[in-house]
Image 1 (cartoon, rainbow, N blue to C red):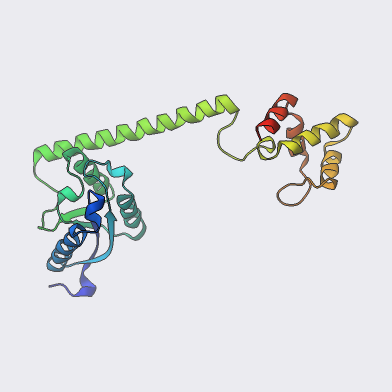
Image 2: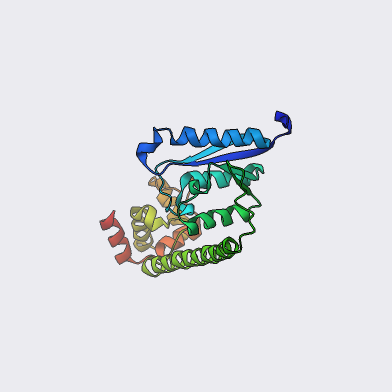
Length: 233
């Protein structure tokens, strides 16, 4: 038996499929099985992740516990995951394989408490299924990227921007209105307008007068847009 300091570090993954099982014996049973295997096989469990009230068919990528497990793997170099059995990853074969592919891509080995290595098999059908799962995972990733881009494009078309810093009109349309009023009263330079705004208590977040380019941006806003922003605020 390996000495404790010589044991390979591993993390445990548990899953209970309903809220009623959370307070039952499912979690402790799974952990006991995993700990018994770890002791026999020379692994030291350094952390555990438990998806509670998560169905076996729920997508791997939506599970908070599995996401935390991936963060831990990527953060500290642990490359072994222990589960009671493959059904703890998922009940459905495709979801199982997607989870296993996700771990394989990170150089991780997964062992069930009976000693089976789930990430390595000579079963040709499972190999094929794993390849198909990898293709679907990449397809879903591509679909999500396109979906997010389409959403950003729609927002940009509707508002003229998407993400980044809020414009002064979005932050405080009243400042924009006052800047335009000052510019209309008489010919003023951008710095003069910034100084007058400061005197009236309108300053940048830093507490300093607005930079000339910021004032220029305020003056470029149309009056109808200013009025709509104030009405909406």
